Image 1 (cartoon, helix red, strand yellow):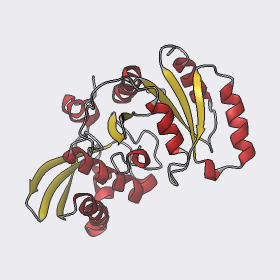
Image 2 (cartoon, helix red, strand yellow; image 1 turned 30 degrees about the vertical axis):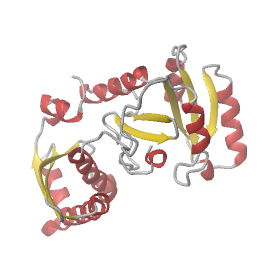
Image 3 (cartoon, helix red, strand yellow; image 1 turned 180 degrees about the horizontal axis):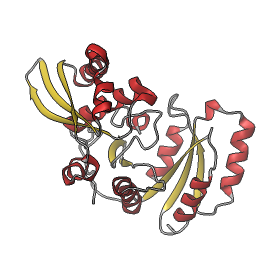
Image 4 (cartoon, helix red, strand yellow; image 1 turned 180 degrees about the vertical axis):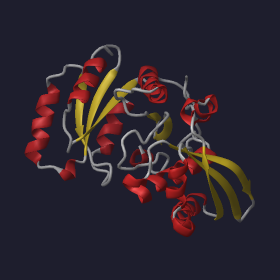
Length: 274
């Protein structure tokens, strides 16, 4: 979605289920305005919090006029993906497309095999090969989607690319840096909340809390002599300054909140239903 709208509005990490709630991106080209909804991944969710994420994903797909199933060309059609396709096959009233991403990472023969396997599913209106990184194939996908749109007035100003609040996006950027910098060391169960946002013409002062579930995890995030939290904060601050085009003073605090996944406030913050 970042490649489609031309701005970073959704974080990207190697960890699965990075996206926790529906994020909307807006692309306006000519007389068409497409509102993309980047949903959480759909997977077998054992806990209530993850179940709420999956519920949000299906709700996003259910409300949409068209659905694009994004497939990693390197992974191919896995068993969970096959189950997902079976569910999408019930969407008889929607235009359902497939976008096979990372076409630059696999041999053409592999892409052909994937396309052949997917074409057997009659639910798919069209299959696209794309590279989000290199922006290959995106124009063709956008053109196909624009033809499925209902007629209406634009829902957003033409220069708007998302409806995500800056406070939320700033928190997501810090969470992304947590994942990228700490990699396998970082427990998945972490949450970032923007507690304070003060802005002048030249400076944005941001205070954020990183919630984790155990005291041992807190020590990991802070690091020896505060080295880890400083590195995370520095990386997040640099990206925020580029995004906001202002100097940013970022303060990060780490707190233990054992039950944050079951806290109603967490669901409210992320826009999830319990």
